[in-house]
Length: 276
Image (cartoon, rainbow, N blue to C red):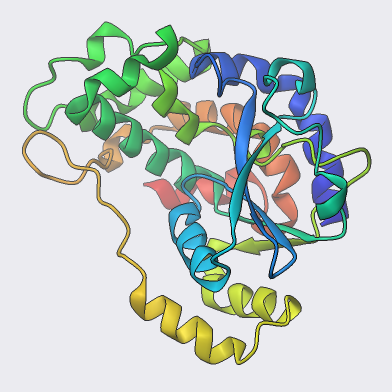
């Protein structure tokens, strides 16, 4: 986790263009984290990496949970007066954790989330003056999947596409919040091994009857949302979209993720063939 944290600090030098894509007057340079006083833990949400499930589980485990705002590393002065300048001293010895996901899967899922919101909640795509490009509005039935290449081109150009596009930010940006000088993550779990890693985390947090509690929470959790097009079909780019050129563009876009998460997932080239 220390190497992961060190890499995140370096990755933030390239965060500004991404953040500009999802401009919002109060959320542009900061993110919410969940603090669990009873468990003495802090969760930094990583959208499209089971973040809703994790928040729900830990709010159940610790009803005293609260949200605080932390700035992205390097943007402490631009996050607003309500944001904490790193973890407050009372939380400094809490266990800080997050979960990560295969970068290419997270990006494709983020595209589906963004397109689903543009199609069905267009006003949300305009929050804060950053709006989706006009070619995403008024799409006909099942057209959303054909716009994946266009979406990647827009991401390469860092065109302002509205707040929902934070779902496709590299994970190195999304979890690169400023925890404090030299403050590292204590635990990094992987979505692909969710139950195993979540059990390890609960045991680390000294949750009583951790295995039984986890089993009960998993039964209660809601299934993942499926983002649908205007024909109520799942939004998922067709295999033919994933040309060698497009895979190369995705590897360039997500270079910081494969640098910081390489110890977990390997190189982008070793992952790209799974997209076809």
